[in-house]
Image 1 (cartoon, rainbow, N blue to C red):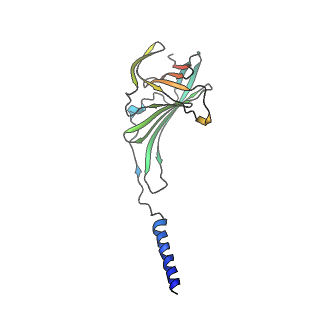
Image 2 (tube, rainbow, N blue to C red):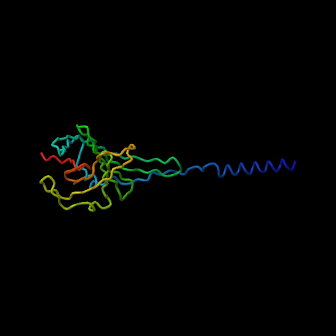
Length: 199
């Protein structure tokens, strides 16, 4: 009989351990952490709007028309454990070409109150704007295609060599950009380039 009592006590102790440590505690009230919308001063760095036609001229003379689509939305990233969720703001502009080349994608995302991500993607290349200090990569003025432009960003991109497990022969290498006109010049790694059409 003492052995049965000992075994029963052991079962009760293990059951209590499983109840207290094996089962998650119920979650308290969940909160959604919010951030203010992306500031207009940042949104205005992308001059393209829904329905705009953007023309870039290739170095060989071909003019390519890109159609702009822009979308802004607020989303919530939900947590599947006992933690708070986060609201974030998202602005995406896609320039879709009428020619078989990659679209150009502009993305602004705000996860934190004092910081927004601003990236431009062309194929495997991403150009990252330093939104913590937008003056960091700005050249005061630059002559492009015999025209003077002011407040120009000059950005270099490194391609992702493991993109779909391949290395690409050429990729978007340099971007010259300002908030008034958008893309001024896009240079490829094989020295071809696209210029903003001024007509």
